[in-house]
Amino acid sequence: EVQLVESGGGLVRPGGSLSLSCAASGFSFSTYSMNWFRQAPGKGLEWVSSISSSGSYIYYADSLKGRFTISRDNAKNSLYLHMNSLRAEDTAVYYCARDPPPVTAIGCFDYWGQGTLVTVSS
Amino acid sequence: QSALTQPASVSGSPGQSITISCTGTSSDVGGYKYVSWYQQHPGKAPRLLIYEVSNRPSGVSNRFSGSKSGNTASLTVSGLQAEDEADYYCSAYTRTSTVVFGGGTRLTVL
Image (cartoon, rainbow over all chains, first blue to last red; front, side, top):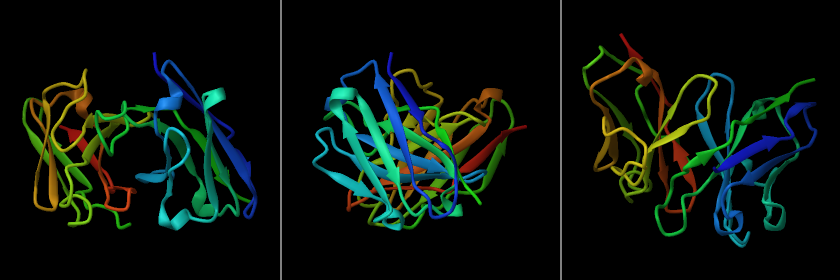
């Protein structure tokens, strides 16, 4: 069974940093591209970043470039998101999600974690 | 990366059909077949309903169908059931390998 479990959320002060993790199990993690999304309270979904299976290709939402860094450790079946210079508007539930199996589909996300809440407040 | 445009809400009675639109540009919805739809119940993670405009993943009811014309994609839910009441989001893969979402549509089953 595919499982994605996010962790690392919590309360952080404006200007602070936080790192999120996503532990993957039930599939061959090293062969799948992975992604981060977020959803502010009462708002819609927002794509944050994507990373290819090997980590060679990385993409970010324009509004987040320079503050957020996506990475992965295939040996640990884990995906990460390091967030710097956090602002109140970064307050959201952060989800990790998997691309479908290679070559089967593009631009969609077939398994999602349950999310971890990040609150940026003084 | 401008958001795709969806109606804020739609409603229908049990057994009826509803359609949710999702309008983008030639750089996203209109330019490629990579439009997806997600269902999200309150407090839950999104669930993939439709990918590549009209394909359903295994396990998704055939009451859900997708289509596209020009820069507008559509999700149709037929035979409405109480459990269909949820938020629905469209997304599109863009020419710059990024992803853009619609603002979401709240479906109410009357």
